[in-house]
Amino acid sequence: DSGVTQTPKHLITATGQRVTLRCSPRSGDLSVYWYQQSLDQGLQFLIQYYNGEERAKGNILERFSAQQFPDLHSELNLSSLELGDSALYFCASSATGQPGTIYFGEGSWLTVV
Amino acid sequence: DAKTTQPPSMDCAEGRAANLPCNHSTISGNEYVYWYRQIHSQGPQYIIHGLKNNETNEMASLIITEDRKSSTLILPHATLRDTAVYYCIVRVATPRRAGSYQLTFGKGTKLSVIP
Image 1 (tube, each protein chain N blue to C red):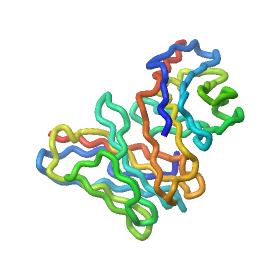
Image 2 (tube, rainbow over the protein chains, first blue to last red):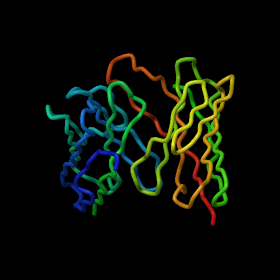
Image 3 (tube, each protein chain N blue to C red):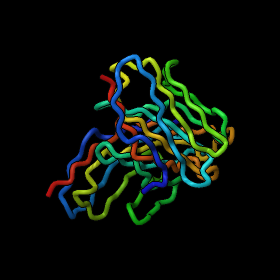
Image 4 (cartoon, rainbow over the protein chains, first blue to last red):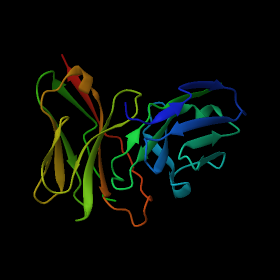
């Protein structure tokens, strides 16, 4: 158990819909990361937050957005969903003093039909 | 960040040592070598990291060559549960700005432990 909690674990939704994925980082970790992994694809970095502020952006689509709340939990919002958005979405967190040691959650499986 | 090169796949007999190589010939002096693994469809798991000295923990050993241009992750007694994709990542330890840090995962090495 990494200490990073993601909900929901599985989600099936239709094209055009909007979903929200939730992440609770490890206790005390200020950094939260979101990654996307499509079927047989590598891990793609989407976005990072540090103590409520966006700090780094990767290949995140404009239809996607994220935020980190004062209690440090984070949400990834995916809108106008397309079939190609079906993927495993991982949240991860790290401590300020150990930025290279990132702890991942078990992921949220999103299936768009 | 320095680019890494790993073989796409490797096999290892159960109970034997698994030696996973990584080439990072353009590594800079302030860059660390990190290893992660991902068991099928699970979240990636941190294994070990090092700068220039060899490192060992309960999961694995990391051997870094003296010129730091390559490294080897060693799983001393591979089990079937070690079957996974192993990622070697090179990254500076301290970001320019606090909290501005992400790891870029390549394709890694798919290790198959065979009974």
